Image 1 (tube, rainbow, N blue to C red):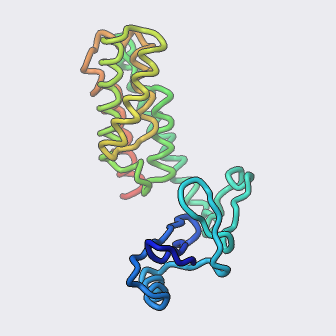
Image 2: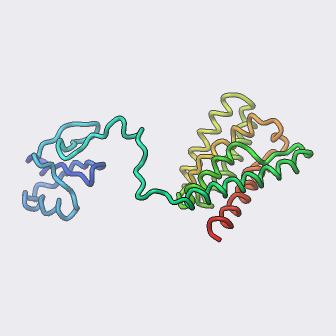
Length: 228
């Protein structure tokens, strides 16, 4: 902590992730500063020394630098998954894809298909992590319908090619962030449309089929198997 003409400057952090430079007006004394720190739940650097890193001042001690290998290590689970925790999600994914596969056979004479690789990713999210934000029905349907429509728009505006693919993915990411409906498998829907001529005749109906239709079936299987 150092005294400056504009006030008292100190450095504190909450946990280990958020470093905040603190600037208090001149009337504040050191005692007031320490009271402020305790009230806000901040922790001061033990040596009151700081060093520059990016924007602002960061405490030099009490900060453990993450290892570059940390991202390569599995997250430690609170407990070992039970046999049922493994079998039920696996059985659910099997049943869901079996239903989609059977429907695929029925739709084949009409030149349509509903069983695609992206729905394998959707099944993984719904059955393996059913309580995750990305598995919420709002996220699933909002993202699937919106991203599919973005794919139709991108092909209409740019035609087939790399520009339509790139623009559609960028727009899909922005859309999911804005609507707070991040659901990663949905980002593949624009590419599926742009590179799949058999879907082009659907035009904006593609927003409902196969994405929303397949997700409706998947969520029904999840409800019946995991929550029944």
